[in-house]
Structure formats: structure tokens, C-alpha cells
Image 1 (tube, rainbow, N blue to C red):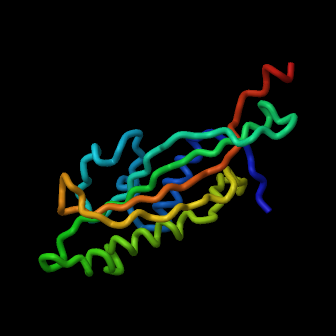
Image 2 (image 1 turned 120 degrees about the horizontal axis):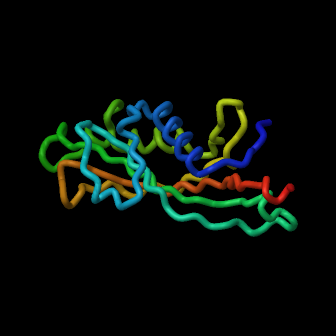
Length: 171
């Protein structure tokens, strides 16, 4: 069993990107982490992209005596899947939704497969978090600003122990 070690949210983000690239086949440059709403982010020159919006965090109920040593956090991320629409006949989305290589709901399945109950690991084989929890995807919809694209999203929750500096307290 892997040890769950203290880590930074930067390490979580790096591991999330690597996991999504590995399991979805989307190139790293199209797995984009953003701080603002994806509607404000321009589309890439690609058929599909994943935007991960970093959301807020909440402290978990304190473990008695844990203090700075066990600073358990729960951070949310909104995972947005966006797919360019161009293969179907007018008023149909069958191919764009179900195509094995670029289908929108196929990509949703790939994202859930990549993240649901997954332990993000470091290079030493230690876990960075508890198993990830994936929420349900929203219904796929054409984007109002660009109806040539379809998008949907889900919320994932990552529970981890923040790596706080303990040296000044151990003197």
C-alpha cells in the first residue's frame, strides 16, 4: 500500500495533468489549467481540449492533535471537456458525440476513467492524495459564443495533506 505524503497543490496539479494526458490521449498543451471561467478562454486549434479550473478548498475537520502536522484539505477542480463540432449533418450530433477518436461523450468517459478513485502518485510511488472523487458530467451543450463547439463539465474533489513547514516548530 502506498504511503500518502504531505504535498503542495502545485504537485497535485502537475500529477492531474500527467494523468489526464496519459489516459485520454490529449496532448499536454491541450490539457489547460485555468483560474477563471473557461468561457473566457479561447479555443485551441484542435478537435478536443480539456480545461481544468482550479476551484476553492475547504479544511477537513481537524484531527485531534494534528495541527500543522496533519493539515488535511479538500480541493475542488472543475474539469471542462470541449469538442469542435464539424462532422455531422445539420441538426445532428451523433458522430460528434460518439466517434471513437473524437466523440464528446467518449472523452467524458476517458476523463472519468482517468480520475475516478485514482491515487495520484509521485515518482517514488507515494500517493499525493486520497482517491479522487468524480462528480457527474453536465449535459453536453453547444457553446453560446461559438456554436461550433460542444462542452460539458464535472467537478472532482481531491483530499490531500498540505505540506507546511515544520522546521521552525521543531527547534
